Length: 242
Image (cartoon, rainbow, N blue to C red; front, side, top):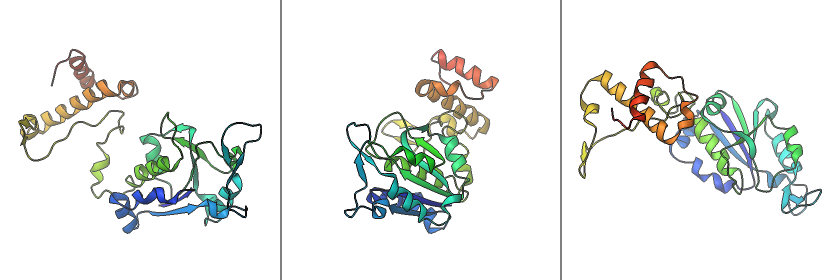
């Protein structure tokens, strides 16, 4: 996958040169390039913003340098072009999975006071990462890149890693443990070391439902629940443990 990011603040993407994303690039599962669209401004001082027509506080980013930067990218017409903005559709795991199947993504980072609305004529979709305001779309772009690249086949190494994660079936992931078995009086649940695979499956499903019930009840309304799930939920509602 190829990912191009258009921004005024390239330095904010240093975090992409680490961990799983770095390995994905090194192994050529993904190619990521950061573009400073300020360099494409026609203004002699490389200014990219101006006052808003109609009045109002703040400065608006001009569409010209962004579009000229966009057009400098090879085969930009065939890429999936995204604008990060608070007015976009809220991002979720399903969207991450959909984007992970694209060959080429271009992400335009929004700006806190906004971009000339004519930008919408040049992009394919808008994305918001939540109902709050950031100073710019760089963090949102990083979120999208991180969540998408890790879904590319081969990036995580163990393909099962993506099968049991939160949100994949509209439930939060169950708690997990590793060594030591006992730490400062806190022990790993005995059922997880029992060797009874069916009991372990049931326990994990129960804990997944329990965590979702308490932290994200709204997801339960969308989940495809089984008769076993409903039995577990009755216990959870009564405050009972597995």
